Image (cartoon, rainbow, N blue to C red):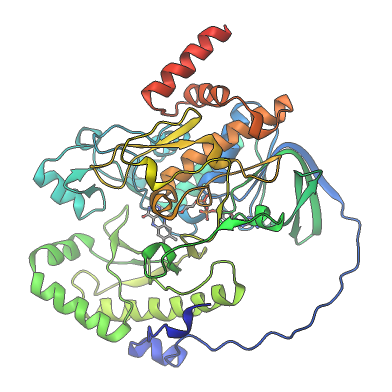
Length: 485
Ligand SMILES: Cc1cc2nc3c(=O)[nH]c(=O)nc-3n(C[C@H](O)[C@H](O)[C@H](O)COP(=O)(O)OP(=O)(O)OC[C@H]3O[C@@H](n4cnc5c(N)ncnc54)[C@H](O)[C@@H]3O)c2cc1C
């Protein structure tokens, strides 16, 4: 690991009091020993058409999409809720559903989620303001994480508990069999194809056999255990390499804080300087769906691996230390935070990047400028900045090279690091999960390998389920439909 030079001293008297002001703990060497486990018979828990492993944004949409096609679907999730980082990780800022013109390009099940959430569980600009470059509107929403480059966008913040409830409701409506508290530990691979997975739970080890598997674990756990190679490069100085456990402070007055931040520049600077001096890694709060709750999607820690159990443990200790430190500094010095309390430390650790699969195709920086539209497009993402056209996402980015019977979706799809910076966002994970679920159900129903599926079939079903595709893709899929009729 590259953390040796990491000098992010954790401070604040409160943090020091509780944890002894510890920095990164030194590692004890691991014994150079192995043990041999006995061979065993593993009971089969279930047989299914589609097995989705991981119930985050991508896995939830994959399960719903496959269910809408009538497939028998099982979803295995290690925790007790759906939504992954968008609920359990407190990543409740859904960034961004609309493109720079205001058109909602991430739609389908993603749209259904936001449409069906209770009105008081969503905060974001009204439809009429999406794409607006009106300065006052953008200034207002810019403070509320919904305007960038002077343009207001559809990037709401949501109540994570409401999304958990709705996700359960929408999967159950499609008769998805939910299996919580079940950690997938091993793929079942025969003749170069994934045929299911083994999971561990309180019952012990059990197998699920499936016609098609979708790996939506975020870290491509099943694909990694199948022995595939991955791309893992990322800039350690960049936010995308940071890992952290987010938290929410309750009992705050965010409007008062926003007013302070906007109108007392010197006071704000002095406050931030003080926080950095005390904690080194010091974060600003984001708005949430309520004025009395502040969201902190940090403290950001770099130099750690998301697939190393000692690093993950260390991040929890340091995040907690910094969380308590933030609470102390904000309570004492930040306008609007005098009565703040620690409402929740995220149940799921916040990983932005670990492995990216090597697919039959991938999204790269090279396609951005010309606005390339892939023939096998399964979704369209808004771009990083208005100077770039929308980004077409190919089906090949979900199909792992080197193994059959399985698809990948969510934050580990095939792309380069530049494109990963936005393809890992919640709406994009909803989008790739939606397509993977449709492809998995089509493959399971027809017996065709995912890599041999006709992309027009996937596109037609995506359109039928309300997804957005580039106009040229929609026209081509439409004429394919007419020709088939
Ligand atoms: C700190 C932080 C800030 C972010 N900010 C934003 C933002 O502002 N806006 C935005 O849109 N996006 C943001 N993101 C990105 C976004 O939250 C994630 O990339 C997205 O949630 C990934 O979705 P996913 O479905 O691929 O994976 P995840 O959300 O990670 O879900 C994976 C699910 O799989 C389960 N799982 C994993 N392994 C196993 C296993 N072996 N067996 C069973 N279950 C398993 C997990 O428990 C989890 O529920 C942020 C991410 C982080 C970490």
